[in-house]
Length: 347
Ligand SMILES: [Fe+2]
Ligand SMILES: [Fe+2]
Image (cartoon, rainbow, N blue to C red; front, side, top):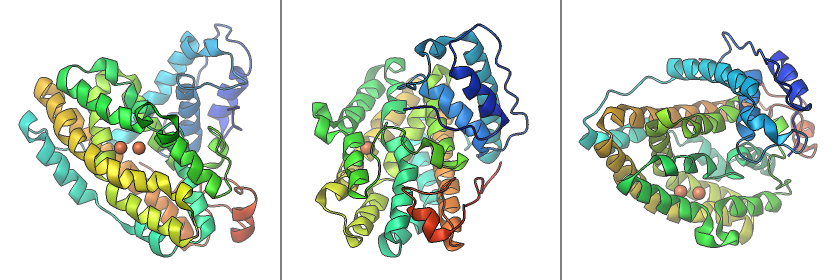
């Protein structure tokens, strides 16, 4: 992956520095007052985090642990965490034994099937392609952010997380890795399946979803939020994925293209149980002071997904693309003739 284009003064400064070797000079990034979905804030954070995943072809790998970069990233994270705290009320702290029930209540209260129903029944092929482009930011590195928690857990919670992640990584078979299944979905829709191909074309609200996982994953203090986040993803996956599969089949998707969604109907019905009971329940029992964090992480996952789905549907209802810029292969821009708002929601 190569560095994307800047999206404002913060990324202008950051990306301009990253193309040169680290030189020890400070990297002052000012994001005071930035909204939760601000594309400049979210892209800057995404780029900082990506240095811990696969990096960029045009960035010196030594930037990953460069003190000036870490200080700049900390400033971005402070703003992100503040905006997140304003957008997502902290659920009442439960007794550790009540975590599973509280997760069920959060998930039930958050259920909003409108996007998955739209994709199942009404979306045209270009809208489905847009949906896949948004999702590619996470699905092409599916499971990686939650894997950061493995060395930070112990006992039953660790075993549960490894069980889930093993499935996500295909149980040792490359062709069954969920990220590989998603690449087949992208190819079936004539999209570029290379890692990060669409980083420059998604809005801040999409980057925010991935950044929340990386934030929780890269800070041990937030490990409770990370396991709650994973549980919320798994608990809200099966039914929407069935609808996505139906939608893609309706639009002519073949077996290879649809397999990613079908796999999740089955796998996540199992993962949901492991995540809620063994992972989150086990973690809260072993770490009672962090039980509230588990619920907060789940609430963040649900709320950020709601904001993102609202953005996508609002754009489509207005007849404009939900992507940040231009087109996927020129098609969306031709269809809509104009760009969608980069920021649909703020905190
Ligand atoms: Fe998966
Ligand atoms: Fe899963």
